[in-house]
Image: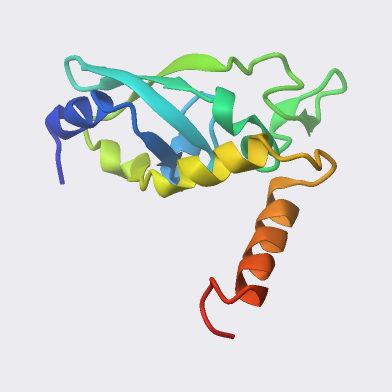
Amino acid sequence: MDTSGCGLIVFAASKPIIEFKKAIEALECYPEAGMRARLTDARYGDGYIEIFVSYEEFENTNRTLESATFIDSSGRPRLTAREAGLYRPIDSIYIGLDWQEYLTVVDSGVERLLKAFNERKDKGQTYLQWLEKTALAALDSGRGASR
């Protein structure tokens, strides 16, 4: 495990896609487990790493993972971070030096899928619906894995 933060600093130079793990939910920040972002920069300090992220290209997928954990006016946890006005498409988060506990660097093949999803003509589908339709079409055409 990289506890110096150096590995993440090196990854940040390539602006990779990251996916957050369950441990991120213990911090006071927007992302929840499974959400994705583009890592745009990282800096380390005394016992922490500050990561700079952009959620912009993952709006549709992240929105489906938001849970209502923020308190509404009646004192009940009914609001998502976005509904509570705490969502920022470009943000920074302070995490521990054991950064692999909070996030993982994702293969860039996902980037191609998200680009195709955002460029599709049928805007009435969710990401999952589109992905399933695309995978089934590939299977039916013989380009995908065998059934």
